Image (tube, rainbow, N blue to C red; front, side, top):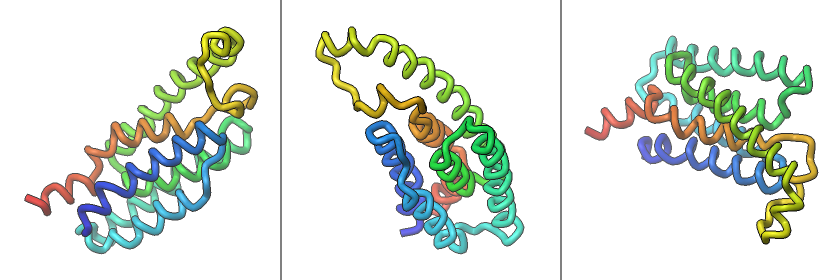
Length: 170
């Protein structure tokens, strides 16, 4: 049961957040709450010591502070900040968190360029029959959960929770 939660919850939540952000330009709060709640439930079974659990909390707090600053500067949306913080909790304060954040930055930059190109060529795409969500084309925002989700899927296999779950399974 523990391994199933580790292998399914974070990836499923990230994919769902990316899809809803793409289609509706919003990330439901329950996704971030589910990530936090599931982590708190599985942490005692993961073999994390109290100190390691504290480092996971510290990682989430550090990411939250950075995201809050970006939100205050109107650079990042609130849903993106909550999702990034909740996902950081699953990574902990280690190299996998750094990978996650770097991947998020790179994929976010690529996503921004793609969305800007799509918006600039919307009329041409429509004449060819390409249909994209109206919210994506007219909003002034970027559905950054797509980048967060992709980055999470790329970095998660090296996270301590996944490594521990694989070792328990062997």
